[in-house]
Length: 108
Image (cartoon, rainbow, N blue to C red; front, side, top):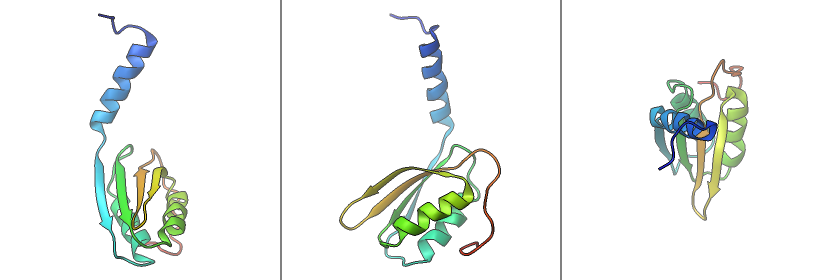
C-alpha cells in the first residue's frame, strides 16, 4: 500500500474533498423557447455557491448561443456542452468571486 504523502497524493485528497462539497443541480428546460432557457438558467445560478454545478437540459436550438453568452456575462464557466438529436446539455460551474453581470438584456 502506498502512503498518501506525495504531492500527487495530497492533491488527489484535496480534489476528492472539494468534489464531495460540490452540489450539482439538474434544471430541465426542455420544451421552453428563447428567451426562457437563458432567463431560468440565470435565476437558477444566483443562489449557488462557488464550485456548485448546474446541469441544464434544453431543446431550444438557440440555447447554444444564449446560454454561453449568459455565462460570459456572469463570469461562471461552461464545463461541458453535449448535444444529441433532441437535447442540449450544459454543465455550468459557479465561479468564485464577483459576477460580471451587467444587468443588460435577459437580466431577471
